[in-house]
Image 1: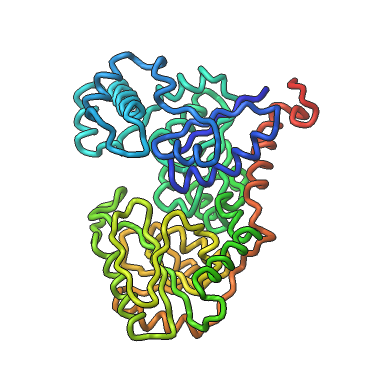
Image 2: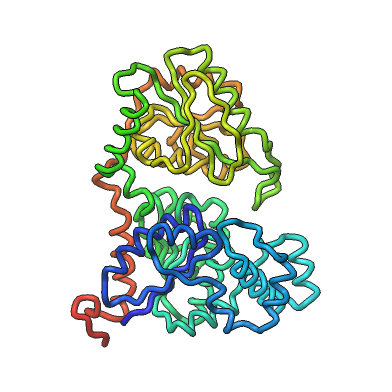
Length: 417
């Protein structure tokens, strides 16, 4: 039996791994342990995937983690989707590892300055991987625990695979380091070229695409889009449908010193609503990010898309998608939709859609109306289609190749040499 440990934070990183996990679990030669961090637990639950978390491995840590974690988190969890016991374990274990790396005083100073961004539980992850007798470690390009897990695997001389979700423009600082993971799976050639420029060998990088996008142009997604249009009475309408996929804009970038405008998402929404009011041949759909707590104000030809509504289906139901730096912009491009990006977000350089030809960009909210009219008159077709959105199988192939380097023929005959 081959022991595979898969480590993931939540959001898009967990979504990228779900199709891979489901596929791997169909192979009886694999014993899969999914270490779900923070909100990844709820993602796994939604897909009926068994998982473990920090709280399941507290026996590997010093017992003082409980007192330290409790003092850091408080009596109640700060998140409705992360159990309090998990938050305590996560904070306590990570902080103890920080002390082991830097000593009490420096650990305290680092945490006061950077908060959880400073967490890097390399010692704990070495214990965990050894406890699970791991043969292969799989993680994404997230920092902190995932980064520590890959480095721990390297120190233990274990095979490791890093799946990079998008462009890795910030993460290249560590993902681009020579020897970071046995193999990297990337979105496209431009990401591979960037990593090679950073010092990685070409044979360490495989272009697989992102498994989270495989279902974008499935028959189910297309049918869902048709159902959305029918249920909202858009079938026979000649109106152009805009989708605004909103996302939060923090006051400061989490990795750089860039300052943001927290009101930018609402300014964009207001500009679009004003546009709809005077342009009767358009309609607008507003989709808020799951972490946004916003009261939707309805008006004529402006619709609200709840988070329960199938996003992939919605993309097939609209004509033009407007974003700042949301992944929805890339997804829209992959299904052949026209995309407009507002390029004055602090995240624009993290997702440079207009520079990469994915979107048509505007430098300010005030230029949106003119750009919408212009883009509406243009034709645009994506390079991608349902036929080549097969990232999951490509990632599986990389995994099998990694394992066969040490266990030649095992995957086929079921006998480990």
